[in-house]
Amino acid sequence: METTTTNVNANKGVITEGANTKEEGIRITCIDLGNMNIKYIGQSGKGDFSSKISTDYKAYEEGYQRIQQDDKITYIGIGSLSREFNKVDRDYTSQLLYALAKANNDIDIIETNLTLLLPAGQMDNKGKIIEMLKGKEFNFKFNGVDKMVKVHKIMVLPEGYASFYSLSEEDKDKDICILDLGSRTINICCMINGEIETLTTVKYGSFDFYTKIKNLEKGEDYKEEDIPRLIKNGTIKVIEKSYKEFRDDILNYIKPYVNIKTYQKIVLTGGTSLMLEKELDGKVLKVDYEVNEDALNSNIKGAYEASKIMWEVA
Image (tube, rainbow, N blue to C red; front, side):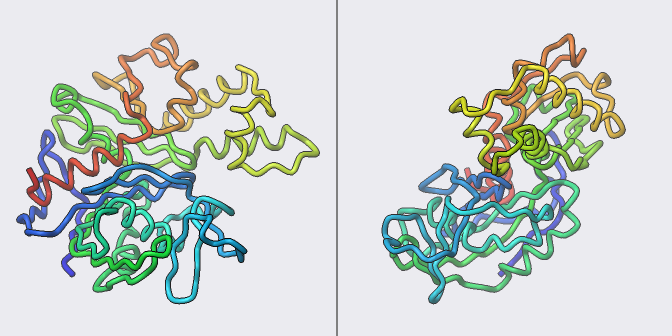
């Protein structure tokens, strides 16, 4: 299997390193192995699902989304989230195979190039992910149906930077700062004339906010991953002050790494940017900014556009 492991550079939306020719019959699949949700785009499917998994016995396994490798069944979307911060140290195999099957749900033998995403600060460890996949074919059952996946080429892109490829050509030409606000990280990507100026990760995100809210709910046995649902259904009430404090924490965390006032435009993306949309305005940021129109999916959509350029797919 051939791999593309370089940290891809951009030149006004064009990948300048490691270009590869198109291969007939080889698909493109992009997967964002998120902390709380996993997103995918392939030739025949796109979507997302919870990162929760369980290997506990289920009396009626057919009632669950599942992956079976040999005799081991992993149930998808139920159970627990991984608490491991470093994504390359997690075992994502079951979720990865599930996403590959969902993204290519029209066939049972899947040959694909694969693009994955990592926080910018974890890109030095991308070789571990590539090694896990290198030279391997995966045979498994997807909800009881036999599947085979063979990965040909691999590209790993930094989160935040991938969103650059989802922007308009007009925005790509600007001095732009992308703030990808996620569940456990803030990925900062600053681009000038289509070239990377700053690419870094801050360890802070909505998970920290949910931990704070959980701790305020004394006497309740809540988990962080349950907090968004409990807020949505009204079980937990969060006052506006808490959201504003969270917003201010984020702005303070990024200050050592970037002066957002020096850029023509700030693009906020990631699920946490939607959480804070009401608390973000021009008076607070004092810059020209926007929340990405598809903030939940800008990384995966950008990764797919970058993959098409890399592998010369029209």
